[in-house]
Image (cartoon, rainbow, N blue to C red; front, side):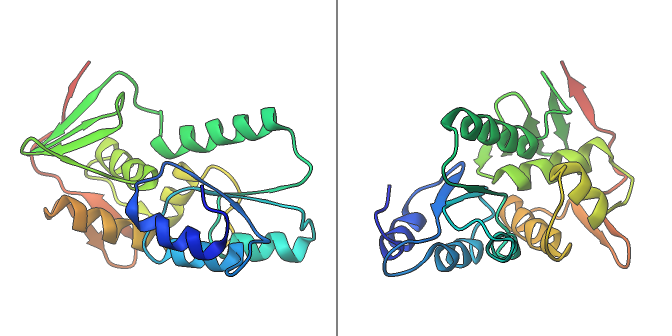
Amino acid sequence: MAYDGLEAVTVFPKTDYNLILLDVMLPKIDGYGVCEFIRNTSNVPIIMLTALDSETEQLKGFNYKIDDYITKPFSIHILMKKIEAILRRFVNNTVENKKIIYKDLIVDSDSCTVSINGENILLTPREFGILIALLENKGRVLSRQQLLDSLWKYDFYGDERVVDTHVKNLRRKLNVEYIETIRGFGYRIDYENKKQTIT
């Protein structure tokens, strides 16, 4: 918990988060400034909670790549359901009770873990979802729009090239050249070594 925007940007880099609840009207640095700071380094899901209910304010939030915008007063039960829905989308539950093995890569969709040569790799929910989507469609080129449609599953406000940022971060974390860029089209996991699925 942070009590103002300055504290938020100070503590954020020190811990890994699954989701951020962010007020807009914060002292020192407002919620938009905090959101911009977070988005420079992370794709963690962000839900804005605020009394500002105008369309302009909501669009501004989505332009900062938030995941939902909830105005006050709100139901805590609805908020919890929205959190569940966002996290469920991001881990991409299309693959259940399976491990996907590709070369030195093991992806466990039950525990949402990824490892290479036995070393665990920490991914954000969207990075994990992109990796699953590419592995489940190995050999196929997935466009940015297809990845957005698959992972976001709701109206997306902003540049579809946000996918490029996720893929760049995913490649850096995996530190292996498994994801191909098909210029003018999108991304794919290459044709080599057919995927094995263990149920």
